[in-house]
Image 1 (spheres, rainbow, N blue to C red):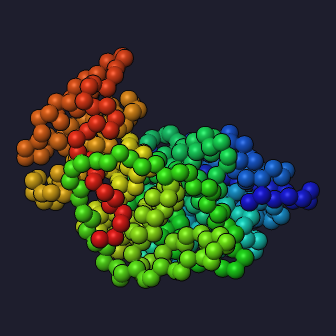
Image 2 (spheres, helix red, strand yellow):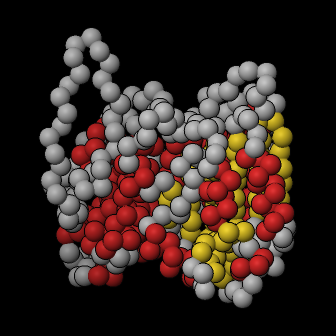
Image 3 (cartoon, rainbow, N blue to C red):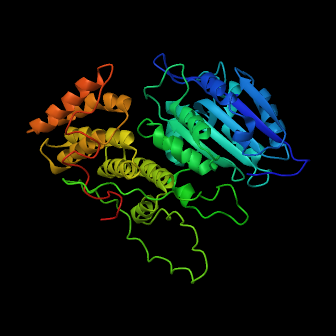
Length: 449
């Protein structure tokens, strides 16, 4: 979204709605999110050096005030960045989604909340490629039921929209910055070159440890939809970093439950010699996405692979349910993608979750349980971050102890490392150097079976 020309002017609009609260526990604290995002340089938000204006709306109670600020921002000729955080609710009579504002209650939604379709209406007339909408929302039960019907969160096709909507009832972080927003800011600060919006979103989603079932935007169907002519909202992926090849690993590996979709169609013919190959496109929703995701991961395009896998997981959760075998298969696919990207902290957490989920569903001596435990153990021993290893260790020990006949050597070595990690200065004990574990994932989960 690089904009040039002296007459261009940009705008940044921050809107903090009502906090998402469940049983007196704060799940999304929009004021904290705005405070954190407000210190980011405007040029980084807009990905442009043009002069710009910034508007903060925090604690507003009148939806018409928010509408006028939104209308003013939409009228800017240059790049526009809109950030919304808070509680997504619904008017139960009219079945319309709203962003709850300060003071909005279940009975006053129609009069005190900002209708979601106003956002699309105001942005509809803007030129494509100039508008970015970033969301970090928590949905209440009324809004969540509508989102399940819609399958997504509708917005203007003229805007890039990225973000997450957390389901009702999740354990929030209190009055602190939400995980997705925090990681989005961290990636913006730590990247030597400002990534495009899709890559920023992918990195934030992959690192944020979102609540199970969170709606990730764009969804799988929106990522797979062909862009209309002239559409430039999704930036072209940056140069792929060289793929890292983990050391060969021995041990069992769980086979994912096949996703009930038709077999993929034939691959397109290669580009003629001398011409650059076209960029890989996401598969359409009625094709098996795993070969495409695997190709992205093996070519080093790990953030894109993680984004597509998260989106397809959300699609499967909505289609087959949270307790389905298909949902568990995609959890294990994401764990394997994290391992391929050398994100062993995330991989350990996902493999441990998969193991405990399989334990709750079937016999403790099932091959899938043992394979998930082996994957968690392998990734944990590759984890060089002491804080991450100390955080993931107790759940890993609980999982290993739950096996009918746990390997005493493995348990002893994990316990020894945990004891050392609890000391002021600690080193990895012999036998648990990164990569030295005897078992682990054998091959990629992502390929189609």
